[in-house]
Length: 69
Image 1 (cartoon, rainbow, N blue to C red):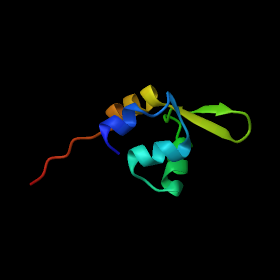
Image 2 (image 1 turned 180 degrees about the horizontal axis):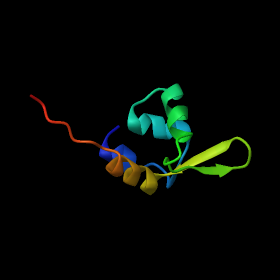
Image 3 (image 1 turned 90 degrees about the vertical axis):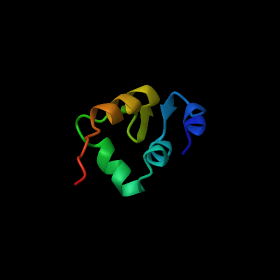
Image 4 (image 1 turned 135 degrees about the vertical axis):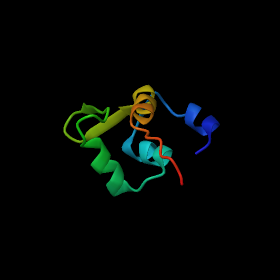
């Protein structure tokens, strides 16, 4: 997903939109949303949304730098 495509997404992402942003599969996406520190908004029994700005913060806070070599 390009930066322009990301900017055009709505403020509240579906699980499918979030997984496309992160380039992960459906199972991995659902594993993420059930982690304690992952930012979700539950709307009723089955509807889940992820705030786009909180997803960006989560990415920044959970990115680790590795040294190669």
